[in-house]
Image (cartoon, rainbow, N blue to C red; front, side, top):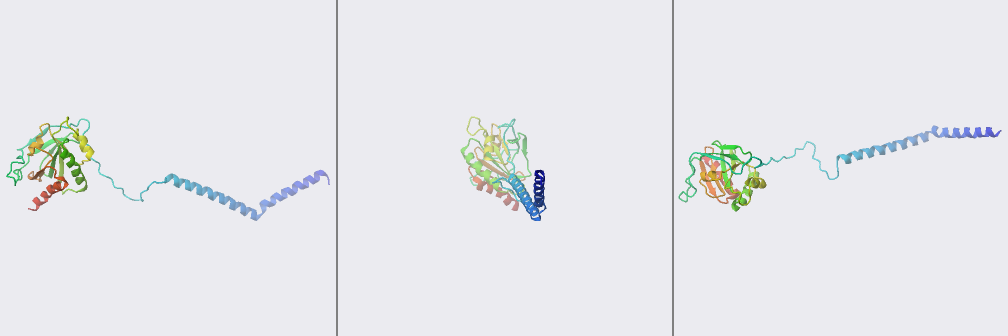
Length: 254
């Protein structure tokens, strides 16, 4: 056998041996298992990556279909074009002063209040308090220490207590003085988080005096017919304001 023949024979055997590896059933199965294993690892890796991207560590997710509570937006007071002191109109006779009774009775109880028109501290637009709804009106001065203690307590009570139907609480910013502390009152009402209407008294405190008051904090309860049912002065707190609203229920039952 020549040298070339021996080389040809060796190459033929190598080729036959290689072909036997591919034709072996066990080899084919082993290769398929290896391929499937690698493919499974790739799929698991991609799925894990998606979960990490969608749900960062520490992120809280709400259950499907859950309804999240939404707080009512607070009223924003003051702003461009809204004065801290404004025009006031009273139609009707002012109430008797709080100290004009005999000490046991209030001379204003049972009388009609004058119709009030004043500017809103939130919008600057005029608001008229006509009969048709029972209301408690509270008078506060931004620089008054008693008012500064009273307003936050009443604000918290109003936020937690549903008022009787067809009633409302209205605040009046009165005795405004730019030269005294805690000015402007609009910023004070915002800071406290007060969330009910606020009217602006004029420089002469016409609203305060028209309800028969000369000091503050002061409160008057007026029924839906525009009749005074009670008045109170000083730091009466949330309990005192609640008692003023109770007067409406008592009057309705009589």
